[in-house]
Amino acid sequence: MSIRPDFAAIAEWIKPSSTLLDLGCGDGDFLEFIKAQRGTKIYGLEISDPSVLACVEKGLNVIQQDLEGGLALFEDKSFDTVVLSQTLQTIHDTESILREVMRVGKECVVSFPNFAHWSHRLSVLLGRMPVSKSLPFAWYNTPNVRVLTIADFEALATDLGIEILDRVVLHEGKKVNWAANVFGSLAIYRFRGAQ
Image 1 (cartoon, helix red, strand yellow):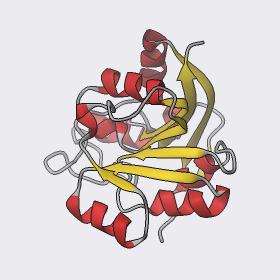
Image 2 (tube, helix red, strand yellow):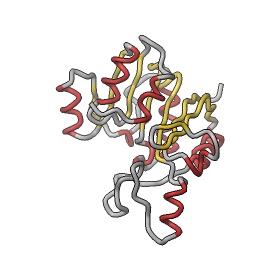
Image 3 (cartoon, helix red, strand yellow):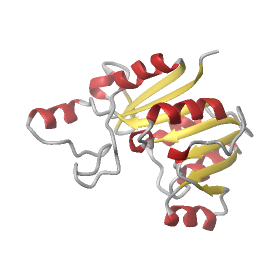
Image 4 (tube, helix red, strand yellow):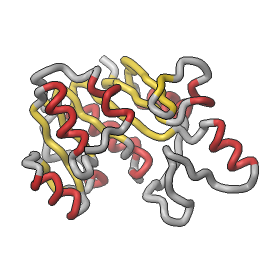
């Protein structure tokens, strides 16, 4: 099982024996990791046939569904935590999905590649779209429908009434504490709807 750098950071925020919904859970690596780390009751949502099959083969609870259709299948505050890990940049209707995440989860976690990392800025300055560890696809074959920065997410959070509880910014698995929007390649937020 491959462990992405954001998995450990997210695990720090998950209470043992809580309930967790992972949106865009892929092949279930995060679900396996968090279940082992925290004894969490886990559920995943995924659209890809091969990924859903991989989750089922691992014995994970997964529902095949497109996130763009919303989360009407779940009641308000039905999970302790809802996670949207490195999926936000693939969503067309970002505002709607964030509202749904806050409706369904008591707390929410989102992680995304930071397009404002200095190496990405340099690529654009040199006339090319960036390709990096955090943005590994070329402009013509990327699953990302949008790019965002730490500053962009925080501005949207204010507009949507998101209460940010915590933030971790990483680069190559290490925490970035200074000038995060320039030196961080991956941002992770814990938040909830404004109380």
